[in-house]
Image 1 (cartoon, rainbow over the protein chains, first blue to last red):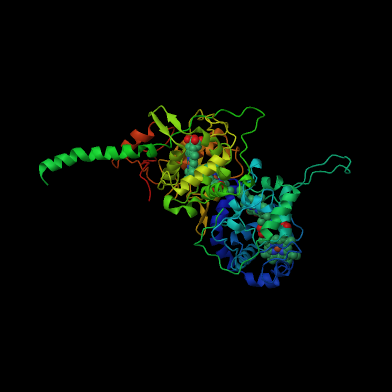
Image 2 (tube, rainbow over the protein chains, first blue to last red):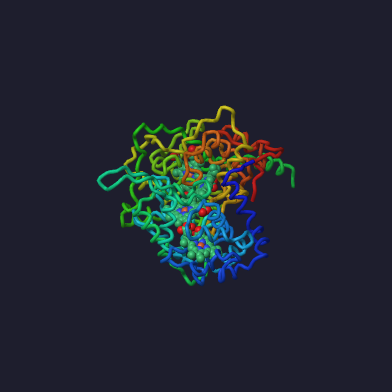
Length: 247
Length: 310
């Protein structure tokens, strides 16, 4: 009855943990990470996503360690269906069967989550126009909420639908923002020949919550905000859930 | 107990109760609706509050910054006054700066406000105390407390340049007119499931990361109570249409905004602290019958709303 993509996503996310657990039993997630899937096109994940699952900045390979299982499974389904385009990942996602997808998602989710230190006491005071400003204050004159309002305090992620930004490299964050943003057509002029519009290559965000944000960011803002989240680094201290994280 | 004494207490107790209420009533009845603000003239921008970078680096600036911190992290920094999991900024978006989200710059210069209905004058501090008691389901800090001094300083700083007593476009929540065919709770549920549940949850309880509330609760024990302005469907419809889904305000129709506001406000939440003699009907008559469109004391799906949850 409520057959919208978002409703599907919501049902999918809430039912998915159980489903993943049931399906995953048939395959060995660890083995897929290290040796690849049954289909040789499903190459070993660790060759790109790193031996510890923390990604490799230079290649634009994201961290998968500690991401929610439902989020990983959704991304693999999106690559498979072409809602998220990428020449490296699409063939891999297509080569994984349902049980393998579920198993590898569970295996990565079980690895350690990113840890970001709590600034004890005082909140951060970002400078207007900086990456930190976008992350903590947003740009409400363009209807852009602060990134941390959806991606969680210090970008640690919220639930299954809002992935962490902390722990990802600047290269990867920039690439995703550009994938959503696409580029508008440009008429011929002094700067060169006319350019056709490039449609977004990532079209998988629920209810378009992320797309309009990326579309309204300037190139300089994309670089600044990506550098901010990449710069949060990783703390060796465990996440203290009893402490408030100030806005 | 001697009969005379019993008779005396029977006479005195209600009197005392009425007296106690009267003493407290300046605080307890001030979440009433704001008058409608004028529309923004075509081509003109809303008032632009000063930039955060312009807060001076002196004792005054410190107080202003403290006010902003409290406004955004009310639960963490003033837990003794907050009875739920809300922060001021949850309903006053962008640190109280966003037009049509009851911004502070449109509020500060409108007080003290005279209300003809009850021949009373409300101060700015009392209005904020109202938000503590109802929106935050908590306890109002004293008028001369550090918390209210800081919040007042923050609102004062943000209002630099707004003429005193002149109502600004963007004040309040700019409610959409009631839809012609009325609102529909079942239709509102469908809007909710499609557009809101992802963040606020199927159970309306919102979402936390550790101790920190990220997506605020819309109903249940950790949300605003039955006396809060947001419990009015018309007020919530205005907030929602301009500000929700987060970052995608102005996308719901008047009808959708009213329907989903009705759905949210057809759920139980903490009791109205003004509850009269433990009686929902009496409380409705006294405080809700004449307060916009609301479902307190109304029977929905065979259940009388207004029971309260703890």
